[in-house]
Amino acid sequence: MVRNFIPGRLNVLQPVILSLAFLFFMGSSVFGEEEARLVERIHGQDRYETAAKIAESKYDKAETVIIARGDTGGYADGLAGNVIAGALDAPVLLVNPEFLPEATAAALDRLKTEEAVILGGENAVSAEVENNLGVETRRIAGQSREETAALIAQKAAEKTQMADYAFIVNGTAPADSLVVGSKAAADNAAILQVKPWGEGIPRVTEELIEELGIKRLVIVGGEAVVTENEYQRLSKLAQTERVYGDNRFATSVAVAERFYDSPERIILSGGTEDRLADALAGGVLAAANRAPVIYFCSPDEAVVGYLSEISTPHTRALILGGDNSVSEDIQEGINNLLLESGDLEIREVRVVDESYLQVVFDDGTLRRITDFEPAPLEVGNNEIVLNYNGLKFEKEVEYRGENYLENIHIDCQEKLNLHTVVVDVKSKVFSIEFDDMEMHYEGDNQYSIATTRLSDDAEVELKLYDKYDNLIQIKKIAVSNY
Image 1 (cartoon, rainbow, N blue to C red):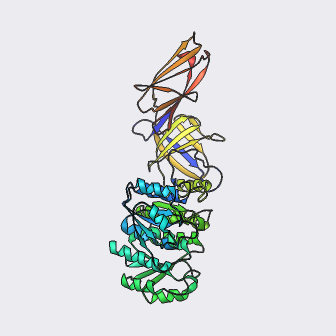
Image 2 (image 1 turned 120 degrees about the horizontal axis):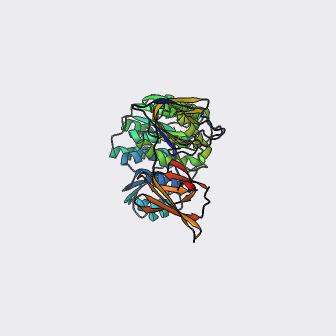
Image 3 (image 1 turned 135 degrees about the vertical axis):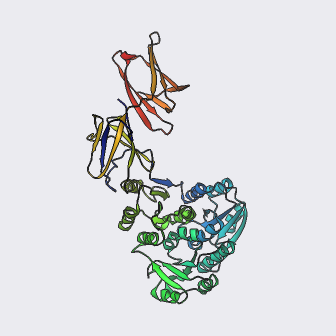
């Protein structure tokens, strides 16, 4: 029997008690396959296609794009790329120093790009690659990575009002630079560099701090990347603070805690040296969603703690990169963590059968609970109890049965030794399976199928789905009744 439970108005109210255990990184979820995911993913076959898909997720058209070197270890000139990308409202696409990836070329065509701003000299992006872009180009390139970062900020200042604060990073520690790309793009804040190996503050960095009227400096990373001597030197130029963690993953959390107050969107990236390209390409998308970039490729204590602390029923996460960047197990673990967050309320409970339950929460997301072992679902006396320890939901709802079937006709074709089945349904039904075989849509909300002859005592099963492929009804029918 199919039953629907919705918030009540008049009739007898009965409790629905859902007691669900959500375990992070511990086996499979209590929820089976889900109609709504709290963690999504953008990825391609490689970093170049991933960057292209990130760009196309935000932009239908981009007259200007930023071109940055994307091979591992080659991020130096592109570290401040999100600063100019934010100023120009332009996506970041990646190239190899020696060739133009097919995915990048295709993205330029789909985005109808007219101009490309190349970051770095010909060692970063060769003249051959520049010529193959097929659009107008201009370069932002200095004699060093520190000068390139300063020039990028300078060019951004020509297009927009810059923030009165700037980030200070070490160009040989790209993870720190890229984790602040989202905030830099959102606020039009410069990302400037110190010299590597504790060799001091470049003159171009000091000059630009003065030129832009920077009043506050935020050092990203510990003393291993920006020394205490450099900190003291910078503090004479402007008010200075340091944001950092024990490692790059903890630093990404520290940046999120410092600059994002209860974010509802989180961007997740692998964070290892060979996966930083995804963070470079994703800064503008993160800025548009007011989302911090969090590095996460293993169950890091700082990251798990942060996600647990800030998660609410409205929190959503987006992973940049494929399974080798952030694994599917990590994705499922984060999804489970978000599921258990906050004070969720049940809006509607739909019972399909005794082993299949659908729950709609007050944030509009729908979950499917199925395949229980042992089955904790008890249906009777208008009451459902899910007997799990852990997170507990309780909701009073009104019992109201609802049937999407209008008419069923079964006809025996004796000469052909088969049965034909015709089913009329309500308009909400989008497809029907007859004993796991898809029925043919005849029009006017009618479906049919021909099958081998059924015995008189046979019992068959109809499964009805809506247009979102949600199973909304299961009906077992005895052939003898039709």
